[in-house]
Amino acid sequence: MILALLLAACQATQVMPTANAALVSPSPEITSEPTPAEWIEQEINGVLLGVEKPSGWQAQKTDDGILLAEHSGSMATGGEPPRGVQIHIFVHSLAGFQLNNVSNVAWSVLKQIIQKHEYIGSAQANEPYGFEWSRHDAAFYLSNNGDGNMTMLIGVAMPNAEQMVVCNVTSPASESSRIRDILPHVLRTLSVNGVQMDVTALAKLPDPLEFPPYTARPKP
Image 1 (tube, helix red, strand yellow):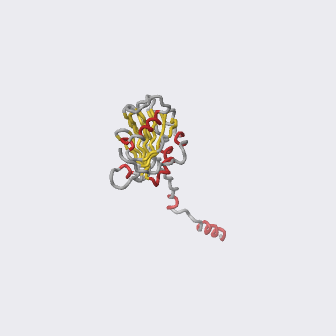
Image 2 (cartoon, rainbow, N blue to C red; image 1 turned 120 degrees about the vertical axis):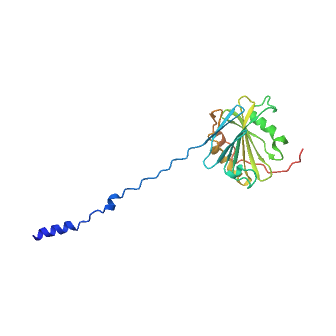
Image 3 (tube, helix red, strand yellow; image 1 turned 45 degrees about the horizontal axis):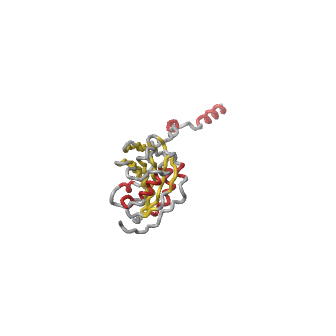
């Protein structure tokens, strides 16, 4: 009799699960889908340009190409001064340039550009640097326009030697040291007529890029 009472007491003191505990379930994991890359494409005079917009950058099509800006304010006219790096990729005709017996078409064109006020204005530019970019004649020059901005202009001659793809890279002087490192990242997907350009050519450019000091020169 006593044993029976003790067993009944033990069973009564066992902790029973609550109704709420039975309803609790593990919190589901919340995953976010990666933002798809935005591909920008524009055809100018028979040359098809394409590039992927870098994450966090702004992009827009222009009449002659594609504009990429590190900060949205850099695209607006007026207002605050441009910030960060801005890259304008466009197509330029080579009509009117002397291209006879030259080993690098792009270098020859840029050499002629820096000697003409109608192209470069009052900016101070250094000697063009020739290189090969995906089996195309290519070259660049660095310039200082004296208003606090620096420019790197890269030209890539098309096989027909009638047009040139141009990458006009600008930034405030205080940020110009970032241009060389940014270029391979921003232009890693650049394609011309459906063929992707080999970005390793940009990684082999001179380091550092030496922008010229500004010296005002008389107008012609």
